[in-house]
Length: 329
Ligand SMILES: [Zn+2]
Image 1 (cartoon, rainbow, N blue to C red):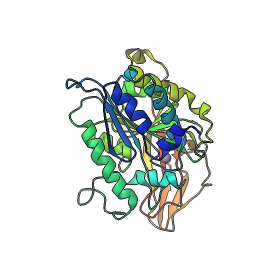
Image 2 (image 1 turned 90 degrees about the horizontal axis):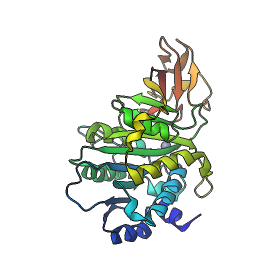
Image 3 (image 1 turned 180 degrees about the vertical axis):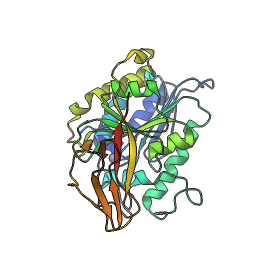
């Protein structure tokens, strides 16, 4: 594994910082694992502000390696950076221990603290990290009209669409086309999304955002990055050219889905009626019983539904899966 990749995974950017600084960029490291690289001019209103987050789940290492490589290459020719960039390595403590999280899933904590939002898990290490990330992100995006957030993950299970995205808020055509160009074959619209990092930046900061699942999980330094090559190429082009106008002509848009229901684990009695290893986007016929939780049951509605992230072993109160319906693109 390259040195950049291992130091990057610890949230250290020192090797990159000097090269961008020497080229005249304003570089901030407001938190461990967060770097912001911006042009110094004050009339930056129209330029895209891009946040790329990786390692929000500490065991999803391929996007960490991919970003380390991209930034390492960019740092050799720093003036090529075409936008204002923030890179956040999410759960550094969990990454160091090769774990998904230490106390609780970080990607369920991106809500403002109580009384307005989060009421659970306040004492956890991840709650503190979520608060810090929300704070620096809010300041990075403040007052900017054009802001994108790509939260890059890899999935635990196989998927009928190996690369897909969950898109909070209302869909943006250019953004969907960019996702298509990055090899994302399916986009699941989730207008009511809450608690995830991308839902926070969309809902509270007005960013166009997504949680992108780029392929299968792998061990740090042992990932087969070729499965991510199309995404890597599109990210490189975005960093160097911004949002290219010819994207509007792109026909690579992902197939569209919309979240129909969330499977919330209300009690320890929760169980799925199908194997927990079922692939993402497995189709279920209308009215099929999909889960029971004591007296409560979850059924498919009037049109076929496709399961995402089934995981009955989450904590009570959290989401044990999503069901989506196909919608016209
Ligand atoms: Zn993840």
